[in-house]
Length: 113
Image (cartoon, rainbow, N blue to C red; front, side, top):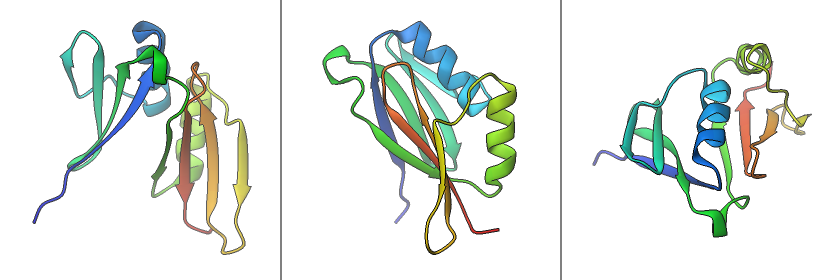
């Protein structure tokens, strides 16, 4: 059975969030379903989306595992966003953590080097 994933992130200000996520993900949204949502396909059948929901903003926690964490972190930095923290777990898995303007946590994980 195919599996699709839609991971939502509530935001306060659509335009501000759209700009930030375009810089974080390095691309414009894959599609815009309506005036208050933007959706990025981050892998086949796996989507990250923002939606204007002010009462819920700042409470999302998402982690994307990527093939080349260092390249992602460098690309994001080149687009003006720095990781709030980076860490390496006991098993060698690495993580860079970012916070959007509303305080939502977006982590990027990578395999040990």
